[in-house]
Length: 478
Image (cartoon, rainbow, N blue to C red; front, side):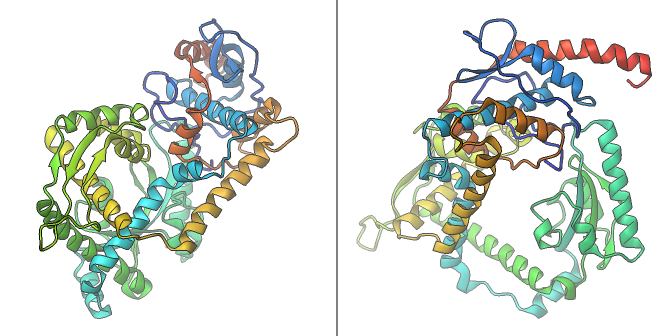
């Protein structure tokens, strides 16, 4: 929660306010508790915002929270995120009390879906092509010096489109302070410790190895102007405020060698994949592109769909018999939907409106990945037990947090009071929140009767504005 975002229920799980698919940035202050649980016999009754089972959130209480939470964006995006978080946390409480194993195989698959698939693909690629790709230190140093591929690191202070102006200014000032510290001789690693890019933070801020045009244009221009050992000015993007550093080769020798090898392995894999598709009659299913666009618009209804988007044949042996290690297969809508749950909402919007050629390219890519995963399974490939254990332990750690926070194992569970205290602490920034896997959220919401009443959300916003805006005008703080 340090970046000011709230976890969100997926759009397909519950109807949401118009324009609310993205993660909103929230104010760091909320003084009131979310004790917004009152009985209601029917969601269509006026005065109700959301329901999870027989727990309800009222318009009046949500409006009170929004007033108490100021500064807080009074729009459907930010308020929808707040309501989403309440719905998902309530659903978790109710299902745990009903006996669902939140550590069981179904839950674990939902949590680890993308990481598991990426690990299988990486292991399969290494098995097929690893022996053919090698990079020496001298070769890597020459590439580093030539500069067409650049390894860069960053410090990022998050500030998205929904970030309030006051918080945006604070984030910019923090980035300016961190840059000044580096310029004055401070440690890059100390600056990275205050970065809000959780993906690059463990590797000293290293973002990856990039060619021209592979980064967003604002960052691309900066990256390809920096000399080794130099940092950039604070650079603003749609993500926030970046400080970019281009390390010298001795600083990142082993990382550079590894990333260069991964890049060349991926290039070799692209050639092999094209050959494999040709050999196995990879083909698009009729209407596949249109189906893909519909899935991008709302993945949730497609989670159990077997509708094909692409197919491929088995590979044949010398005698013309199908090889069991390379079976025929299908890319189904359910696989695409699961993948899409982990795609940022802005990217999904682009795919929803993309042209036929772009959609065909995406189906090709996703179908090839599914073919490789199916082949690996047919060959009996399994993940390293230590990796399996790490997946489980990471999920168990998250669930330990939620069990403690929502008192899932208490004698009186499910507890409205525990949820209210949790929301109070979250919005006061007194308790960090671990964002749940979006597919895990969908798994939860499929097991609880949950609804969000759009009119209720908007009515609460109107009520809050009626209280906040006159007061803001009087104080000259609009």
